[in-house]
Length: 222
Image (cartoon, one colour):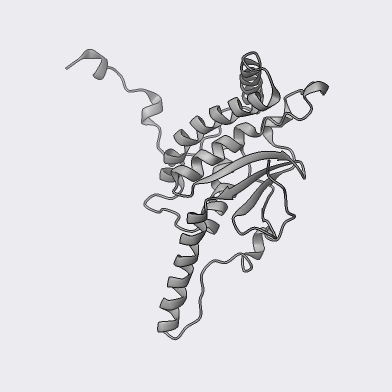
């Protein structure tokens, strides 16, 4: 057998998937992300192009992060409903990637397809100094691209964009097919429980009061 396959195993491969990962310091992350922003900035001509480049890089990270995170947090379980995947984003995903949960999760009052992940001080903006002439730049475009990739890979295709609103808001607009599927699942649950003579005991936006999230202000998309 080739010697490269028989040498000592890498400690990375020996590490259990279920073990918490908190090895990267905030200072190291800040330095790395700042260098990433500067690298992209030297290769674009406008703020819009820079945010698009950051979103593209975030997309690559999201695709690679989802499988390991699901295996660690929810082995053998796959989210099938919008509420479930949004709570997964707000909690386990954000904790694994940024060290804490997102501050708030809201739904638009006037559009059932639109939801908001709100962070008052996102880590990706904390240590980036933005020149006055580029004041519209929001480096959370990286997180928007990451989240769009995670949702798409999980079976909930959506468009995600970053906005300056209540700090930083990531606006999620699900495809119509996702909302239609969610409604059909709810109808099936209602039919099943009605046949058993009981009421529905599933998840719903109104009943999830412990997160303090639903019924947010509307935010216009780009």
